[in-house]
Image 1: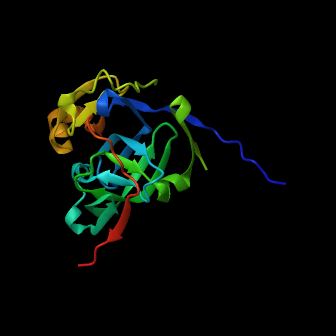
Image 2: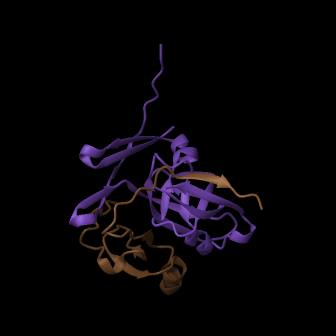
Length: 143
Length: 74
């Protein structure tokens, strides 16, 4: 018999913004805090939950604001449609609504058009995630 | 805290491709700048109170995926 752990789902609204042709675009954005161990600063951002991204990717401006020395980080190239230069570094990602902190490697990409993408490795491994696009809601539960 | 998820009234054309600082409930744009460092410098001691985002252009459709990573060995 399968055992079912009761999950405590946290609901989030998709954020809506004006898009192409004055349409309304709904995106699954959620508040996370990013910090660099050893420095007092933490940066609160709205990151997009993105099941199509392999790892978690943040704009390199966030690393600079956290005083992460990118010249000492492993260089990477992010590919997909086009490519971006980036750097690999470890940070702490906190989901304040759930009081869950994850120490994880992230890619800091130069010229990323969005502030952050929460991808499959580490983030999706830590949460069950349910999208209900018809209601413009998504849900997270810790696993 | 209930947060505002409707950015259609608070995010304007002038904010596009800039970093904005939002109030904790996401209901107001506090300030904006081309870089996050410049924005946080301007906000001074209050910089850790606000929530930051980079505003996407409203005249483009975006595709972020699939975004994969390759290590560069110099």
